[in-house]
Length: 165
Image (tube, rainbow, N blue to C red; front, side, top):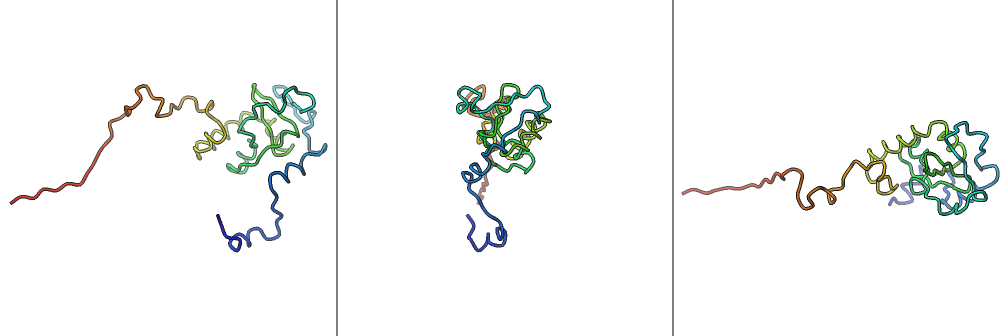
């Protein structure tokens, strides 16, 4: 999107990593979520080796970190389920690092509501993050009561002129 010379002043001295590099670097034993650090009894911690069909868990936000969406103003950072997945109210959440998981666990409802608020600011996130259930009260136009009819009659305007002799 931007030329290298435009980005150079902003990226000078910064190592830019791919998502795959970041996932490999944050997949050590030290990066795993520690269940003793979570004080919320409504949250269950799941790991690959202790959960059947772990790879098939429906991770919320399509695998993006919900904490970073709220804290970094809609920044999409892929989560790393290898570090652990939190189960809260029958939903599964994965995070970009263990500190994000700890902060989410302290106030899960505020982060879940924060993601919904972020989606209100950027409606494209509803589709991207599969937030349809949180916005279930919104009916798509195509699924209205009478398909093909508008809720209100459209206002049509046109410029016209007449000539008289």
